[in-house]
Length: 411
Image (cartoon, rainbow, N blue to C red; front, side, top):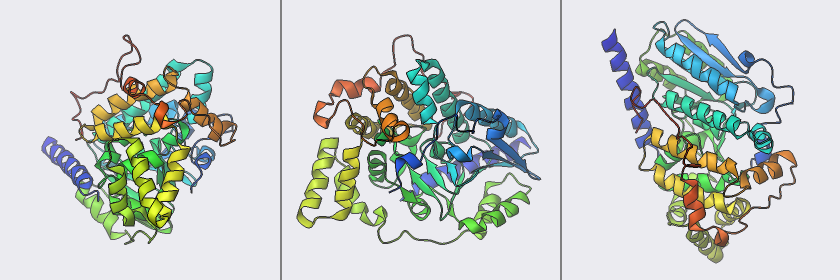
């Protein structure tokens, strides 16, 4: 039995590694959580529901009115459930899906905003520790994992699904990492998976916060399978009948009911040469200049829209995020999470800038859509400010601790 488990775990790791090697205007205010007092804080159990089949379990993110935005309690429950399921010999594989029109819009940033305003930074740290720990658990999980990305899948929502074995995108999927637009950085493992995308697509997505469709996700490797939303019930029924922990059996079932799709003619994936040409530069200033040069001669609509998007973002966040993606290319998942934890604590501390609170205020709280970034321009963002983001909060602040000795890091 131990030999079978080891073989299955090896298959899972191989399928993950192969999926990464093969990686070839939604408004932000609609893409994250609503305030936590909007009748969504039922009891903790109901925020993550559980479905059981013959040989599988499914975790259902269940805050539909908040687009299933994650809070600390949800992440802690996921971590507890997944550990118990991994240790249960009667469970062969695990699934995750969302209620309503979203898989998961990310972390509950409005709640974080209010905690920061109340001076409750320790509660914010607990949120980041818990969600990053769960992401590492998922990225090193010994059983096959299937995430059904039907609907909005952004930020932390991508973080709690993409490190798993299989990701099923649909015609309703909207993916993005729009953190620079709220004065933050793509986190929850984003610097790992974005940096493994083809060419410099990861830099484009991280800096612009632009969306991808389900068809684009499957084309670039962020998703492993694609299905029209109306067929998901059939897929889940077929998966529920399986009595296996063999990822190849699960994959065969997913492939049997998958649909063949291609990105439409307006997709960024058809502009990958332009993306590589512009986003391969070492600095954000050079990226701006390259986009402006491309747009000046032909009035290129893609370059112009990308420039407009970048100009909406926090200048500091742009520089921090570019460095984060570049470092992620040479790091394992655990190294990315430990570094992102440092960055996140700096981002909420106000030691360097108040951009996170200002971004959430402008887009999610007051909704005036007019954030006052500080620094206000790229020229005012010093190298020291960027460097500070990658340092511990202070001498006494512990780094994120992950069980890397017990669980092999995903590379």
